[in-house]
Every structure is written in structure tokens, then in C-alpha cells.
Length: 132
Image (cartoon, rainbow, N blue to C red; front, side):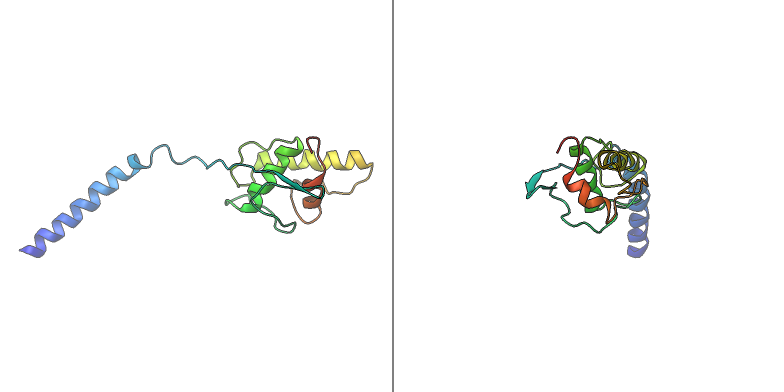
């Protein structure tokens, strides 16, 4: 008899939890906005999330490289939209504009205009933009 009661209580709890859980998480599905804390050392900018020049930000998950690149794009004068760490279409479009800017300013095709922040783009992103 005790087992039946315990089993019934467990099933009831699971059912109520399944029904109530979506309400508990309502409004929390939006991406978190991150803060950019800019520092400059020897002409290179850092936003406080990733200090390297090799990791390519992801378009599917939040990464520190994604947050850093978005912050630096914003600082450089090429706003990527929300600073959320996911390098989506807005971030890629901002990166393309930045890459075109660098190529135009140098009168050379130094960067592929592909919207990807990789080994070639990181150093320019850390130093050379309109707002830097």
C-alpha cells in the first residue's frame, strides 16, 4: 500500500512539474547580454572575454571568442547587434563591413570579406577601427 501511495505521489509530482515548468521559465529564453570592459595595451584592444587571436567564434553556441569579437566590432564602429556570444548573421554582416573597411583603408585585399573572425581578422579587429 505504501508503495502505491509513493508511486502515485511521484507520478503526480512529475505531471504537475511538467505542466508548471514552462511557466517557471517564461521570459528567460532570450540570450544573455554581456558587458564589454575595454582595455588598451600597446595599441591593442581587449574587451575582457578572450585575449587570443586564433579561435573562430561559433554561430551556434555562446563562446568567449564570440563575445570578444562582438565587443570589438562594436568598439570599432561596426555594431553586431546584441552582445550575446553567438556569432549569427548580424555579427557576420558587421564583420564583413569591418573587413571591407580594412581593405579600403589599406588599398589592399588584406582580409577575405567572408564575415569570419579568424587568424587574419583578429589582429585588425584588436587595433584598427573607426572608434579605436
